[in-house]
Length: 150
Image (cartoon, rainbow, N blue to C red; front, side):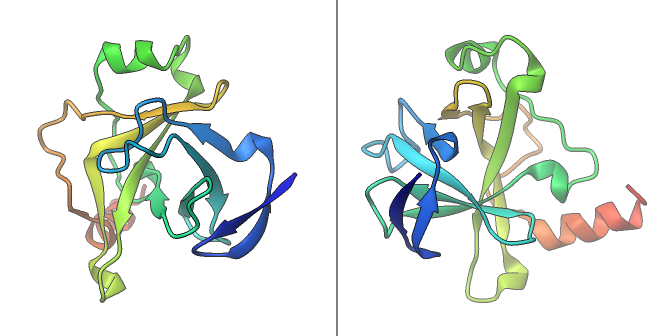
């Protein structure tokens, strides 16, 4: 265990198992290669805290949490770059944008973050699903999912 500084939580204890490495960084943050994946209480959201950069953190959500028929669609090259042997080893997240009115929050489904859960190596991929956009409304999709009984 070690202590890091986090924008969301202040000083927090983290374990090596929470460390995720992005060899190519994240779009716009290519200079940061290591992050810690942190739970945000009992919510469906996570914080992706940059290691050594307390002010840089992303809010994440797993798309299947709020979308009824979500299916990750990425290239085989992206899968190979992570060294994925089985689809079960893949975790995927969307970066959440939380505006002034949190009811208007959106998720970037066009640029999912994919993680090999065994090696904890990750990358930002490009979705092959043309229906997905960079500002997908989360609450509207969640209401649709709940109406569908899923």
